[in-house]
Image 1 (cartoon, rainbow, N blue to C red):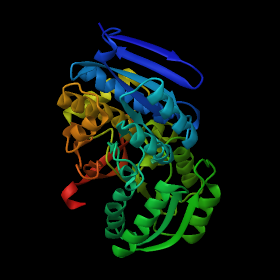
Image 2 (tube, protein in one colour; image 1 turned 180 degrees about the vertical axis):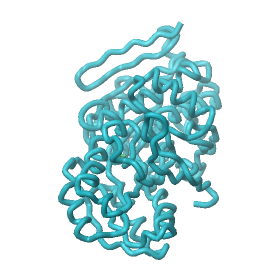
Image 3 (cartoon, protein in one colour; image 1 turned 60 degrees about the vertical axis):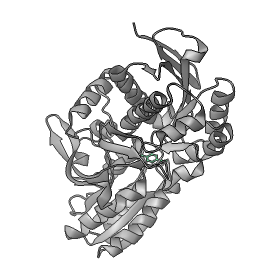
Image 4 (cartoon, rainbow, N blue to C red; image 1 turned 135 degrees about the vertical axis):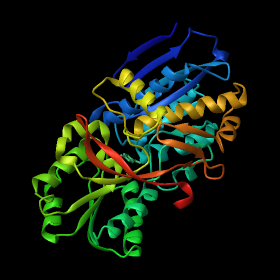
Length: 387
Ligand code: PHB
């Protein structure tokens, strides 16, 4: 019988999953460092929903061992806290694998600790360019933000939207997106007519939208963080009437984050984005994933790419354990992860054996109403060989 015990303290929550207590050597410990509370608590909710969906479908054993997950709350973009929690997980809890990491700065801060302890670190979301170079023990199942930019830059120009205003969150992933767009948009024949970096935590976008209104571009291209930030961003776009000015809203899929769509309502309709997962992706596995995710996270919480990151981190850890026959040596596990291929709810994916980064499709999507929900409807697929 499956047993789930949940203990929640102020800064840490522990979830044990397994068929019983088990002997220490029969258990594999996975330590998850996630944004479980505060303004970005949706990130942690996504990770857990995806992880539980994976275990609901695949059980709690891999390589002959019971997989136990220990969860620590980093509370937001807090690199020093992330470091302390990772250290605690390794030294005190003796975890075999680290996972989670919504924010790039948290993942980057923990990288040297993973290297030193030779503990694999499976990234569920953090999306800065080349992040896996920070440690030979880092493997990423999320995505790389700048890789999403060229297909959308080209699509905008093809549609005749040749003057664009660029808006990015002011930290490393935003700077990566900015650099990619400043290269890709002119290369496609467009012109960047304005460019602004917004504070990471801001929810007041009115002044930025006013600037855009004064400039009257054909389109906005944006990356701001998923969650409350993105919801405020879209509301400001409508409130300033930029849609009425026929200024197209485009960006990375972070601006049409599924769990926040109910809060945004029809303000998101028509937005075009490039991303690696849509809840509306048409596959049998995705249907099953969405069903299990809703059971785990609640019927009113829709899965995003972060939920899929939670699912695929577990898929990779399980597959590596199967390959090592349950050997939890960190170097053996990372070696086993290199080159791994599997089907994700987003489509086929693999881990590049050289970079330890993910290889996957990019989808162009448009927000449309489907049934009683607004969602990201895929209209073009860019396969890895076309990227
Ligand atoms: C990141 O810090 O890498 C990050 C955070 C939130 C997102 C995307 C990327 O929505």
